Image (cartoon, rainbow, N blue to C red):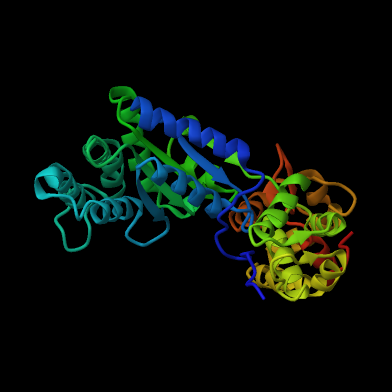
Length: 392
């Protein structure tokens, strides 16, 4: 018996269906490493939980490390703030560098630590208000110092071919940190286009909105929405990990599993894992059949219902009313118009803005153009319809 090659809920090593994004990153990586160029726009991939955002970032990281780039990984949202996390990442990554080589980097690290006012360390002008201090930090002192830190790190050609900052859960980053990073990158764009550095981030569907709230020039960010997987991508995600262990999938088993997973990457991994178990954890030469997929369905349905129940429990009564209305309207149409929602809920269209924004922030709904929303995760709308009656 061989252990399952599928990884539901974990970081997948392969990211089928994201070939265009991988090619784009590979091209940018070549610009950095081979031509020593700055990637001027901050790239942000966004989508619902379970759609593979972190796996995509990790795939980028592996490619960058293969080209000897220095990769700094940050999961945003810690109380210390985004800039402190970047400081800590660079400090740790350069800790083993010779003193002479890292002297300038450590000088900028210390300077930036003082600038942003880490608890226990001297901070900038205690006389200014908190709001003024934050703006000053982002637009002048902090951004300029962060810019110098990035330059000093990326310019060490003996140890670094390029510098790539990876920011996961970017929607949770503090606004001051986003501003500081954005202004630092703006300075690099204008003054140092020959610095081989880039920022790649990932977040929930509200990430573009959160960034836009923090900075006024969010057009300098390149946003990449992550969609559900195509049938071909699902087939590859199921077939290829098994093939590496010399186990095959019947074509009708692949077709049925892809149909049931409906393009949701997390569900694809669930079906792969459960079908593998149903097939008896096959040895090399084994085959996964449509019967195994049929057996797997009960296990997958249970896992998805547990997932949906947890997400439902994490909503307020007003958010549930909104979701129920969307779920029932979505039964007959892919996208739900704001006016139809307001009519069903018997409220003004404008009053929906707050609850809509919170549900997008939780990754439970997605905005699909002006005034329309959808529950994007396959099966969740049906789960809600089972729980609650049609409010119309």
